[in-house]
Length: 390
Image (cartoon, rainbow, N blue to C red):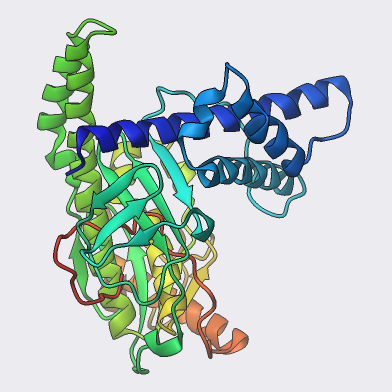
């Protein structure tokens, strides 16, 4: 639990970082309209941080760590770089940087080693101009962290995410099984060995509670303190659903990576499926987030993940004889081709077969690449736990 003064200090840090970000974006947008040269980060830092602290309008910038403000400028640089790389086709297209609002439900600040933050002997997080924060640790840190990011989410919860360096000791011993996965809505996943994983449908199960909290929110007067309390209840209800789904994804993805040397999945067009009448169920399943977990865990622990093309006819080909007889409506759940096969298991076997060709052509992974920590990793337990494969 944070004290009232610590919450206030963090709110000031969030606000100052947001103001510097918006000032820098405004300066660069003005330069673009006027056709002048693009302001460099060093010039913006001098103008919007160092010199601004000496003005009455921005004197309060000196009340927070300067590192937080510098990192805000670097975040803007990253946003512009991603935008331009999207225009050049180097990454998926992203919109231009936008101004941040104080009403944004997610706020974050980042402290690097230059800020001289530390973890105290009592396992508290000491941040400059904020104080010692009590942290509930979810795991041991494998090495000395270089950066910490403090995040406040829409439900009013605070998280601390650390950047640490890990070594090759995380590579798991080799195993022989390989698995193909067919995703669905009736079952979340069907494996090529015949295992079926039921879909928890977290959102569907929580709909009654979510409707109740949303209805209470809609009845509150806009701008009132009661409406803000109701908004937090809605956010916490949604956060509970998201946390349960994330935990399910973590447990299943970890089990699959531990038990299989290679895992194959389909490259699903989730955005297209989300525009159909099945949109709510598709979002509830969270296939994209699950595949992302499989991807970084495979890289971290020395496994192989293969994506096959979304147009591969896995549901149209018999996995035994190879006969292809065209698409089938969704109500057809049994494949009859000399033998009687389950439609989903047949598709999972075809996914594995198609991936086997890709693996043999590309070669097995020898050493895991550097993998960034997933965004959701943050400490949440008072007593450190042994490290887990997450």
